[in-house]
Length: 314
Image 1 (cartoon, helix red, strand yellow):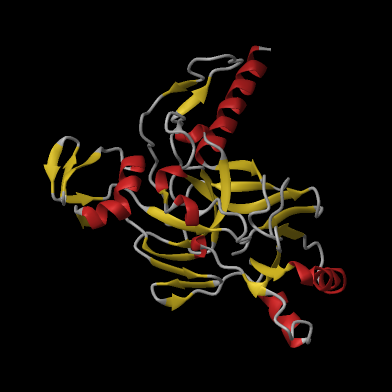
Image 2 (cartoon, rainbow, N blue to C red):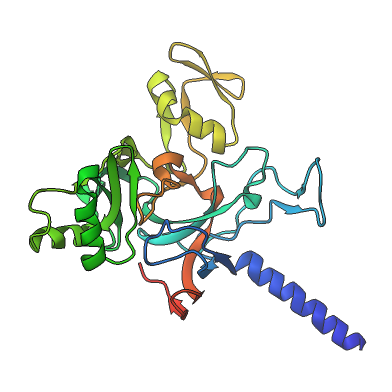
């Protein structure tokens, strides 16, 4: 009996160690990744590429009511050495950077998106055109883009959905309708002669126009009003320092006047396959490495698609 207890204890410690430092499973919660990954899918995430994060905090068991719900171990994220770097187009799992500051990073909601740009890359997004370091970056053919149409064309669009596309929902706001198609589907409709009157047009918002450098560890910047406007919020949020404006082109770093700042960690730029979901770098900005859990490597199972143990390809 004593031997069995020790075996169970050892198995528990081994399982917790594997979950903490090697592999962990997560459940998809949204349609942000278009048709490839759907809500309910259970994904396996590997942590050895970037290095596993040490547990920053744990929840108090059976906690209820007001008061601190977490037992914190570290004020900043501590990561074990990684074996390599993330690659472009990998699916990355990360904690939501827009969660309240008082919430420990590892307790924040988990999101999934596609890493399209690495530390040091220059990103330009214009509608469906994505340029990395001024070169066109070809995205997945499954990328869903938003198109708009006048309310008078609703019946014609419903006809297209019924006979030429599957599971495409129509949305309407006042006198304008919206629908999501892949670029391939849109071009096919044009080639087949169904959109001769340009009934559908690509809907562009301010979120679909981006031009930015992805910061990297060791990147030096001159502190002035221009750099503070671009990087100030990010530095104060994720770098573990206090950067304050003293006057025109004058700044204090941790209370001391400074003219330069050097970034302390790498950042990544993520973009959803379903461009209608804005919980990616278009609204969050670059994702700090401290918030990244790992990259999704295996689909354990998909309840809707009845898929099991499928390797996730970029």
